[in-house]
Length: 543
Image 1 (tube, rainbow, N blue to C red):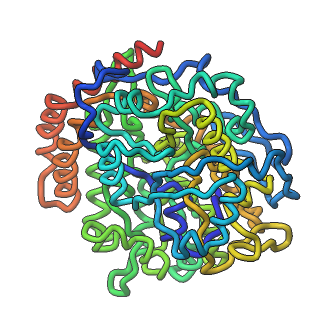
Image 2 (tube, rainbow, N blue to C red):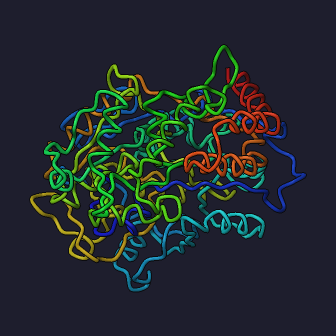
Image 3 (tube, one colour):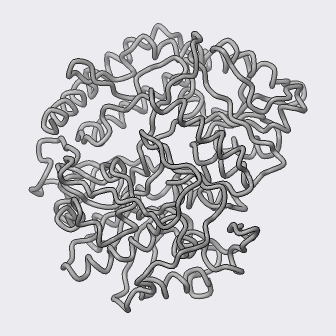
């Protein structure tokens, strides 16, 4: 699935493809405030509260959306439709705190920003926090009391109180058919809205995407060099998967099957094949974490065999951030990434002959059900408390950001200025190499990841769609999605650090598997049982 055609996956991919923000910690100034969530739990909004889904009908897709979050397919960009009401009337300027990198061309000299200012009716200022420092910047900003008008929200301690104290409750404005006055926001699927709800209320706007699992993509050109002609070889079981890794590895030639953070990426796909719960499962009303299962120990054991056999780049533990460099340079032939990256690579790197290796069940028997991800970017965008007129202005701006695929405003918000950042080729937008970035506002409902669109790559787009059709219907949900546990964000991270340290040592063979059960018991005694109880309470309250 393609977000935007890009020339730099490292930079532009960070801004548009939805790289995850993980953040925890205690916010100064929040403790002791009254408000929602004082009991340490939170629930999602009910069907009666979430905004209606009113799909945009101005650009019929080549293949309609499917059930369970399967996006519509476009093989080419439609003749752009100009939305009514733009540019917006002149309004008060605003500030926004967003994850991203500052533009290489300053806003005052950047035509893409000038276009955005014109379209939304006012100049504005974006305060950027990078992937690594956004947590700190967010917490400092919240503690200061000097809040921006728009802000990407991450899960932190006392989050319900934070929202209740500082941010606008949008339920009465957007709930039900109220969203119809903002057609771009109304085009956001129902399930995506749940990411921005807590304690039965709507607190912001999330960026939609399909709930797809990670994909294992390949460079078909590299596989061919190493004797494998099919860029998407079919695997019957875990043994086939390991054999493929072995075939793609030649340490004497500095060739490895893949380079990946073993905990965050390699273990994720082994979990999918072996079939652990997707983080939390709910069994007869009880919440059970994947750490507590026998399957998780199987994942550790099988992943350790792969690592100790030398099939991963030897610096995967010490320098996992280089995994894209190894893949781009041909040192590795396989790459684990979010689903959206598949379409980006197919579009931007046609010489790679990108393939997708469907993960099998470890013991065989067909494709492994997806470990479904959230149906959008979990760090939603909230608005500082304000009067109705101000909130309406900010929602109109977000409605521009969320302009549906097929509109001129989608091109303006997602690609920038034609001839400056992109050109039209055969009716499709193509990013101009090394051109200035568009503004990083897509987190406020940006529509790019809500469709499957890779112009000129019909075969790849169809493969992406069919992959989702095979893996999503039986996909495993995280039972905790949409629920809030205070323990999970305030106390669990410290214990998670100890868990991760032991896992790394087991994977590298420096600690025995026999230490794992004691560690899980410590985790459960200190935080796991409390988290389960809070999630159970929240689930019961949600009905």
